Figure (spheres, rainbow, N blue to C red):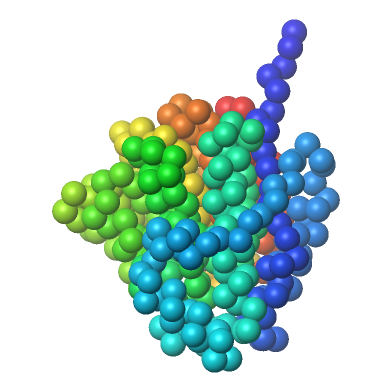
Length: 318
Ligand SMILES: [Zn+2]
């Protein structure tokens, strides 16, 4: 009797991301990244290490306005300590590191589209999902997932891409970029009433994009079983109705119990269960194709543990 082979999964991590220096007290720190990298390094070598590449300005302009790209470049060149558009600490390396992060996600997408890997987890920083087309904020400079979705639509000529965002915060940048876009389904589970104070359930997209936004705010202190119930009742049926050709995950781990920033109580098993549901949906509609991108997660140990649980579940055949 033969057992089915596990899905071939890639992981991307690189010490270059530690060069985005946010100072000694910032929660989005190189230290959290080092804890995560060490845990990924310990995974068996059945996980394929995926190399990165640096995004070009043309890549960034898939989701961002040219004047915003200029703002980032100028602020970094002028040694500003914050982006002028919002609460995002920068250092002289931040522009280059953010380009590396976006480029790595595009590289992962290309590996998956070529069929070399079923899924890739990209451990990159700074995170991206709060960055709008014209404004970095919430520790985010470039919106890697949004750039990847446009890359899939415009360069790989797909017709429908779904983004599932389970970071504890609403991905206001991603939602705004695709608000009127019927080709991108954006689904966010997040804690209600916290930063960036957007993402109410009544917003379902606008214009041609009416119905391709799904906001699922969850009450403070709620746990994994509640989130999984919402997933089964709303996330899976919405994905099934949309029939995506590629699944992107904005994988924040700040909804995990004991995270210093979020107040949800998900466990490593919650992330594994959500991942299994994503794989199941991807196998059904997307030829199994998933690229998952790190967003938040601010307990170094919790982040490492939850992310390992996530990448292991990416290998499982449902
Ligand atoms: Zn977050």
